[in-house]
Figure 1 (cartoon, rainbow, N blue to C red):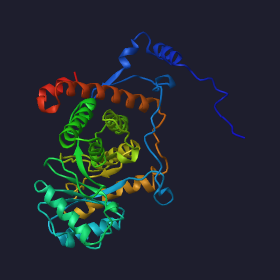
Figure 2 (figure 1 turned 60 degrees about the vertical axis):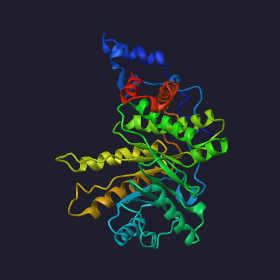
Figure 3 (figure 1 turned 120 degrees about the vertical axis):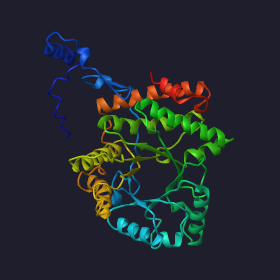
Figure 4 (figure 1 turned 90 degrees about the vertical axis):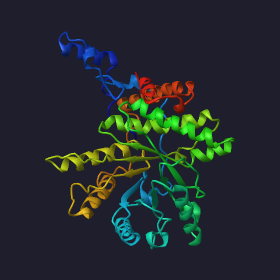
Amino acid sequence: MEQRLFDDFKKPESKAWQNQIIKELKGKPIEELNWKIAGVEGKPFYTEEDLPSSLPQLQIPNHQAEALGVRNWVNYQVIAVETEKEANEMALLALNSGATGIFFHLKAIPNFDLLLKDLLLNYCHIGLEIENGAQSLTSSFEAYIHSKGIDENEVRGFIRSNEPPFLSKLPNFRFFLSEEKNENANLGLAVLLAKTIDIVDAKTNTTEEVQAWFKQLQFNLNVGESYFLEIARHRALRILVAQLANSYGFDLALNDIQISSSSGQWNEPTKDEYNYLLRATTEAMTAIIGGTDAVIVQPFHHLFPKNPAQGERIARNISTILKDESYLDKTLDPSAGSYYIESLTAQLVEKTWAILQQIEEKGGLKNLSENDINALAL
């Protein structure tokens, strides 16, 4: 028989909490306890009354839950490619030591036979970054996949470039679309969605083409230091992408929305090197709890200039520890139902969508200066 342990306790109403706080403040206005950070407003307490009328389902169980856990995310190891042979050795070491994806930073189109030697691409994800020549790089990668007889449906990852977006012939190889740094959380998400609209409108003529683009974009968030806000931002982005797809006339499945999360790159001096490690761990944790599909922790080369492998190992192990020791892969959506986080998520969705509508009413990002965009957050 199911026992409800808390049924014997009276559930306090919001008004009761408010009266108690006013009493404790001894005459000070309760409004002084309200706060605002990154354009998001918060209250001193939250109750069930603050929950949205309906709570969205933001995660679905991993189809390989028994082997990979209920929740699974890609643990990317960042590798700057100097030579294909050296980068290949680093990639194999990383994949045998906890990484599940490799993010190659490239200066030129590589010899993929050397770079990807012995990498089982149906068991790991591949990210490629290059400043120029992204389409040629992707074509070369596609040719390598076909030459090796690899099932193109099993190749997963992304291409990152400053060049105009394009679609790969590999259905699960996406174009990396990252948010721009912005001090206002609502505005940052709105600009990312506006960039998505600009891409989709410029590249498509049919609903089928729109769907193809949504399914081949990798939305990336640069994770900040505000713990609960970052959890809510990740949750809000998934809702907003689905909402944007719906505005184009179709429903986008949850597992077709891919979100990656990048930790900060810190180079300022500090007397406590472990401060960086704690920050990176906290940022990765917020992204995972928020439902990210991939974590990209930058290597700590500046902390270990004489031992770069150590900096790479620590960056790689952050995600592993959060999975194997903190068990974040055991719960589908650990923040679901939280009065505070659900309320923040709903607020971000509402305010971001309102800003996005203002951007589109003015003809999109192309018609707005940086000052015009920043003014929308006021």
